[in-house]
Image (cartoon, rainbow, N blue to C red; front, side, top):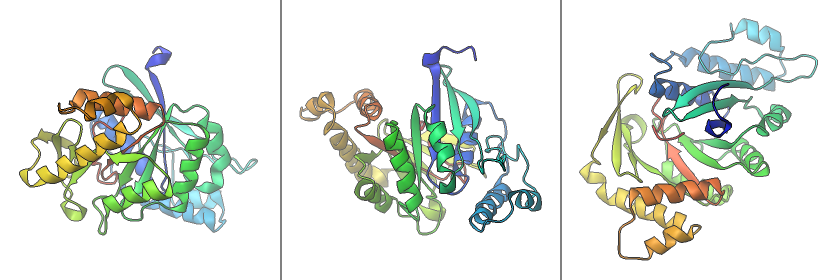
Length: 299
């Protein structure tokens, strides 16, 4: 790898017992131009769920792999799931993409099942940061708590991605509150969704105050526009909440927040970056990995 070390970022995405991280990684390949057309992975998602269920039932790994017709490369970024019968383990896998011409992003894919905690612990030593994926429907689960504890143990700067906003019963703000109460996160939303469940159409960036609309069958076309007028009050309130939460752990932003001048996007972005790296603040992003509707600015 020819890139200087300072341009390389090793990222861990985990938290749900489903292949959401696969979809998220492929979406960023599409954003960067490394992938021209999205993989159709719906069948692979179902295979993955059955694969984990078979492990819980202690069925044969080899027969399960054969019966489900699992093979390496079913999606561009999927963990290769190579079972080692001598150690009852599955090793981590690494995929790469370039981001904004400045960074080489390495996404390290580890088995999501809690039964592979030793494999995850071994891989954690290589991470620079982590993304904790929570379900917008089910909220904070036992798996979420276990993974978050691992991130804390290894002192990883992290952010939260709330998935499944397109699903029936999605309750975004309840999940945000659960992350604060059950995981003790000092966090705030970085975005506001434009619609929920079947009406989920896009996201409003609370830092830049821009709206991102997802178009196309797979949300592959992202259109940047103005914030819908009917959302002005909600967006204003959530942006103020974001600024207040960050200012509680950042003196520089707190000083600006107490003044008469409005907080600029640049000042807020820098404060979020400082406090996230210092592990004092956890930004919350959102979307639908299954529908490839994920934030452009997540990395």
